[in-house]
Length: 42
Image (cartoon, rainbow, N blue to C red; front, side, top):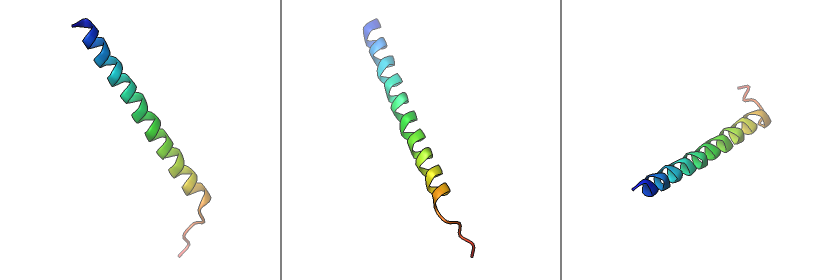
């Protein structure tokens, strides 16, 4: 029972790290896109 709980906690922890890395990468890409595109001055 304890091993299953630890395995579940480990899987949830890894999944949280992956989600955080993907979100950070998307935020970084959006920031670079905003910084490198010309402003719309219409």
